Picture (spheres, rainbow, N blue to C red):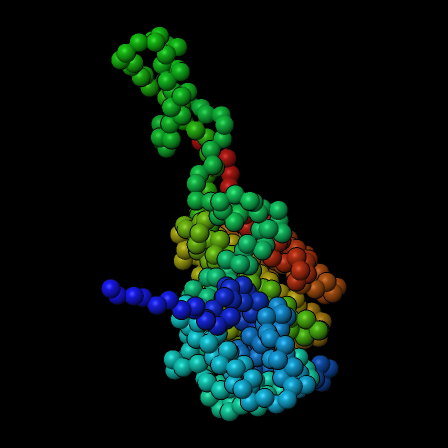
Length: 430
């Protein structure tokens, strides 16, 4: 007789970690507004742009911080990280192996890709507590870079959307995380007689009731054209949206990162449109000294730079994109924290002036605003600052474009944008 010997599985505690929760804990790191262009010195704000954000070493350091904050490291590991341990080589190796395993799990489950398919074994583990560090060979982890996959981007968008709608009171204990993601068509209780051209969304009980009242209860029951009743439902028009993101230097200065919340909103909007409004489109433009369109897949890596604010070129590019779309509606959503301070001249050079409201820059910007109005494109502006120059500019722009302006903060930006977007998506129809 054959016997099978069963032994107790001794898997690593890492296998029990919820990788999605850990990834959500890394969202601040993954969507960091950063500072493009490397180190930059400003006479008022000092040095910026020195933080590494896209190497595997930086990812491992962020993983350590997330694990520390969640209390999931062993006491020995915490002591070693703080520099209070006995410099135990086995504990160091355990930490290094743990981080390699976590990075590999993210790659295996499709959230990340690495530029050379390796995890960068043995990278330097920086101090995650501010009290010490563990030195390992760091060349590999510093030279190997990671990138979010479409699955990773979509996951962050889903979690951002869930958080935003939950804050708006849309969350529910039902089978869906939020009713706004339901794919059904919500019908009104009252129905009305069918008219030529209506979708044949029959209210069968009301239709049979009309036929019985007309002919009496008999078989077969003959239906007449005037017996037909149809449900009244929500008509959802398609909309093409361009989201304009300000990448001027002020978006990460003044003591807060204003760009990361803007990126979260873009990812949440993208997920909402893909799951709930498949007929809609969303394109993203960044505008600093110059304006350019970026793919949503690269939004996580977008950073601000030592740039001015070329609002005019951003509006011109957004208008060209929207005029090529065939949706029922078109709109521009602009997120900024500063007045226009740059404009592109006919020869391609950029004229800049950061002092006050430059008359020439304002004139060029308002010309683009007027062109958007002529094309039937409203501009909804979300401002992250309230200085007098900015308020004056926004009021004038809203007056010309017949758009809306919101003065908000990084805490309420997402809620304002989601409410504005969804309130314009439905109107009553037969």
